Length: 331
Image (cartoon, rainbow, N blue to C red; front, side):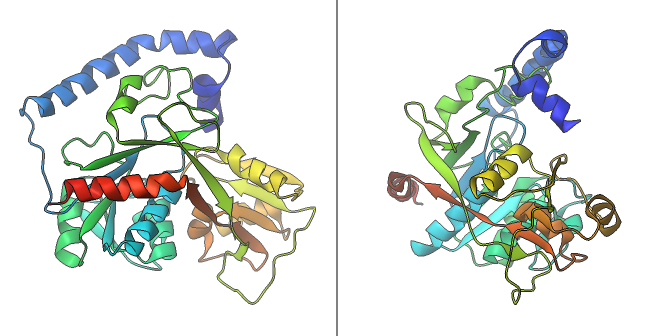
């Protein structure tokens, strides 16, 4: 399903996919009307916005699908810590059946907190709370942890939460796709929204004026089951799998690293996995996956399953500009 939607939104507009996109335009018009009314309600104070007692940085996008938000959140956590801040993170916890809020602790399964929150906490041990209502999640975070700044993982359209700084993360290859609103295109909001954010970070491709380049730098291969005694050696008959917003980015990284695989399997973003399913696909062959997928497999991983962590690298002037903007907004 995800591959078809990607062709519809990000492929070349021709034939049946273009026709289907055009047929969906009336629904895009309805989406525009509803979202515009919602934004207007907050603008004229018909809906109440909530300001927290600490600064809030929102990391989001205006397109559906993966763009590099999670590595950016991890980058911000580490940057803010070097500047003496005590960051905490809030997130929706996509795919989790949850009433209210839940604190994310190291080692909690992705099925209970979501793959991205599980990955962020495993990597950084940052205080984190998930919940559909980000205001409620932020309140619990402040009540349970000693944090002095909050990063919202996604939530650019969650207008109830006041924010001090907005980061828009953009896939440099796919950018805004066909430029249409949901469901005819990938846009959650119109292209005008880019001009309202404080920073646009472009993941992995050329920037346009006013944008900053971000690249994802591959780290060292690690065993999914946490056994660090073994050393990774690529095998030509291995299977590569990715259940992320843009699986081809992972496969392209493998090619750039000179790693050849027998099979590459792309799954929907946030896809849940089981031991039986992966063994049915890979047998006893070596399995290569993303870090985001690894957190969903660590409880049942075999010894020859490996994941590749990546780190965001952003133009140096971004660090200075972000910290300077935070100082201006300090309260």
